[in-house]
Image (cartoon, rainbow, N blue to C red):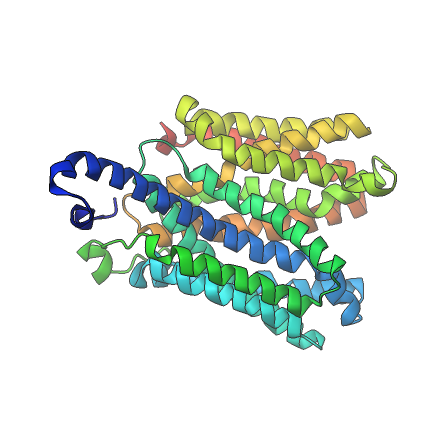
Length: 407
């Protein structure tokens, strides 16, 4: 539990109304802390979606083939993987507040570099840095999310991840607006950078500054020498969720085009309904956890993921498949917020390092899931690929039901 001091509030209130005023001021301040954390999550999601919205334009500007673009895009996860071995220790040593502020600033700054690329190698270097600082930002901001959750009696962490998903919509809409005004990627990214600066300047004061325990300052937890088995299994659960999420990002449109054979603009229907369902599910996640508990919610979520994927396989038609993708979106929406919160509250491991361990394992889901779909589809067809990933949902339910940390 972070050590948090509200004593400064007494200076703001008249002595006669100190008790009543203190309670109101404390509640108001906590809500402002929650808003600040949500906006940092939003800023992360906005940066990523802003980049994604201009990929086609950058591809055309640099005259990249599909294969060349795929190679360039791989630089982003490489950058994230390069940061993972030491990002947790740095967040623990210097504090998640400092790294959140610095990380989001550098993440947005690297976004502008991507708009300046005039050669493929420059884009690759920019994406490497974008992924590198994105990892620091991700670990630090998620650590802040865990600390903010500890200040509230009710579950709120799902809303933070909902803010990230909401930023995806806003980033995509902003991209369409920038295209309508015929702004270049650099001009677009510069506007996004300015928006992030506003978020930083208006919210950095409300990020939580945690006073670490002396033992955490003097010693560094070593995952390699003494791995925490609970964190390993939490990482595997999150791996299954993020693999399911990753294939929907990359393959839902292809599935609607090749399997459903959706006409024209309806090709994006599956992806759109998935995103809406996932974002809505993350805002509802806190209510579900408060009422039914994290264990039941995760078990049902795993079943819903499998149900959605197998429904898409067995009923490859427009309406049933749209409903199926909505089910997958709702199922995956609960996995990351709940697992990150549980991992962040592990007693024997500092929060930043615990999140790094879980993120390192689960992130492989994004790397392995989409290519695995492609390889299996090449050997068989896309429906068999989705059927295989459907097993991941059942694995989530099985593992959660057996993990003692959820009891």
